[in-house]
Amino acid sequence: MKNTTDKNNKLSLIGSISLGTGVMIGAGIFVLMGQIAELVGDLFPIAFIAGAFVVGFSSYSYVKFSNAFPSSGGVVKFLNKSYGPGTTTGFYSLLMYVSMVVSESLVAGTFGAYTLRLFPDSYANYASVLGVGLIVIAYIVNILGNKVIGATATFTAVIKVFGIALLAIAGLIVSGFADITGSYIPQNTEALPQGFGFVAALALAILAYKGFTTITNQGADIKSPHKNLGRSIVFSILICTLIYVALALAVAGGLSIPEIIEAKDYALAAAAKPVFGEWGSWITIGIAIIATVSGVIASIFSSSRLLAMLSNMKQVPSLTKLGSLKNPALVFTSSLAILLTVLFDLTRIASIGAIFYLIMDIAIHWGLFRHLKNKVVFQPIIPLIAIVLDIAVLAAFLYIKYLNDPLVLIVAAIGIVLILVAERLFMISHTDDEGNMPMGMKNTSDKNKKT
Image 1: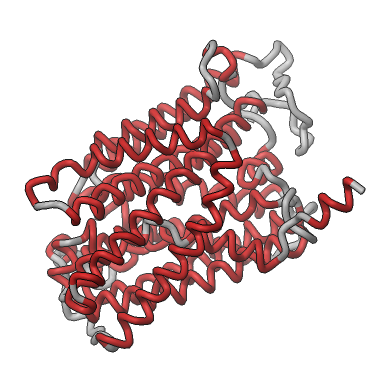
Image 2: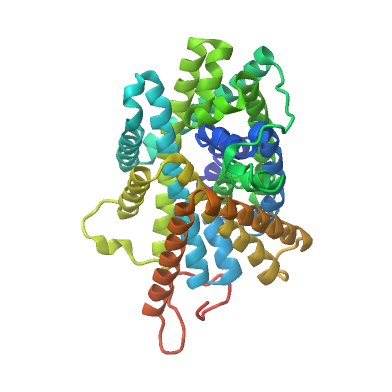
């Protein structure tokens, strides 16, 4: 009877798509719109279509992994299958973890930027303070347990998905389709070859879709996971693409590109005001607040679970050594998110997250192509195309940041080096004289040696 009940309680395909779409259409879209416009001008709606094209190739590897190895471990399980337990898996898993924490900081900062639209301009410098406050609240909610999280997750997901969709449709009806000529070239890309800024902007567009990777964690909770996980990923990306493009067109119809760039941290609220009036702006801010609050709570929950999983796998130091702290993974995750929120503005936070995510994404595709040809049925050319696209986007984005904001590259490089060195030293610390690593887990990839 118990097994039947468990089986009946599993997510259907529609339920999985709903959950995945709710995760993907996160608060990041409220701020990424303006940042992408800052790189490509009036072509930013097209950038979301191109971003979906790149993500489409990337999603292929995750679909194949999910169909072959459905698991609540998601990306960590995929990396472990490809590279085995060791430095490589730990390094790329930590890049994924840090990119998730960066996303939390981005969402928290977005909460501050939109909430402050309800107050006089003299309070504009308090966005990070509000962001930190939200992270603290999210920590408290997570400490209270899964029931509190679960009770609000579905409700807020429905509000933000349908709210954003209605804003996009209503905006298009009222303002009509904007003219997209490609004639406006932002100042920070005017000295670059034509099209270069557009390729670089795809790094941020991809960031708006990267939530699809969390769908891979549903392996233990979905019916027929070997086929439905992959379907859920594909349909969620398609739905998000339609909503993002419609929303971008609505914003382009309501504001000029200079106005979008000037209000890049709260572009949707700024676009709603001339189209719908003061009430429209307030409704947009309300949806943004709901989306950001629920997004931070859910993201901190997911990322802290990922860190705890890595600790249990002995890919990172044991968190139980932190003494009497309740849920040390949650404490560490929240503290890191607060630090990033205080130190960096929204543009830099998004940039660092995009860099870390793209590097991890390349590792996923290479792992499938190089190490799992005999275990997973797939077309080798597709992950190779995904790697080429990721490298092209990452290279263009890095070059633009080198020209316009080298601090992002310095911080990202320091973070990568620290993660790699720390992970390697930790792996060495529990490797025996024969090179074996007792990982405290079943070795799913038949690799016991250092990697």
